[in-house]
Length: 186
Image (cartoon, rainbow, N blue to C red; front, side, top):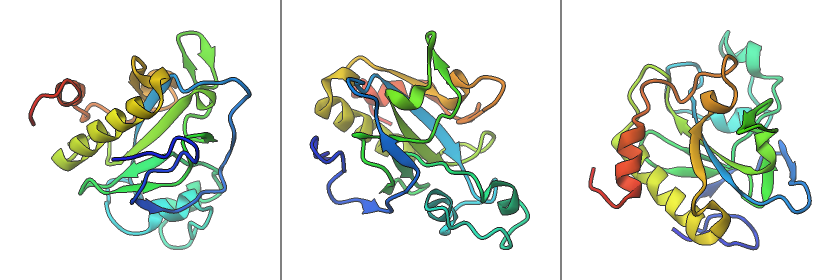
């Protein structure tokens, strides 16, 4: 996997540019990787709904849950589908609106200095093998492209917004990701 450092885009993956992003603060380096979980509607996988949410085009009348989230202005840098395919919404050089009100090690507004990676999933449904492999590969590419991410912590949304967010949830296997990042087999 190759990421163009200047543009912040991954070569050869689907792109659905989101308007829900802006410039990072001057001098702000990438220093944190945040793992999220998302499914629309909750617990259902596939379909165009995540793309539509991040593009501000989610139809409120297509599902009762959509009416509760269609006005949100959110995004992530990347989504990893259940099959391990990547879709990029925001260049890594820009600030995606994925973490909201958040704190990591006393530092507020994690969007400023983090990368947000969504996994298609739910707190209580195990994530797919292909997703762990794709996530480990993406993190490796990010670390090769931005040395500031070389030793960066990898946290869940729940870790930086406790009490407000629960994703990626107890079904996410952190030890599995650590094994893969260390070069282990899955």
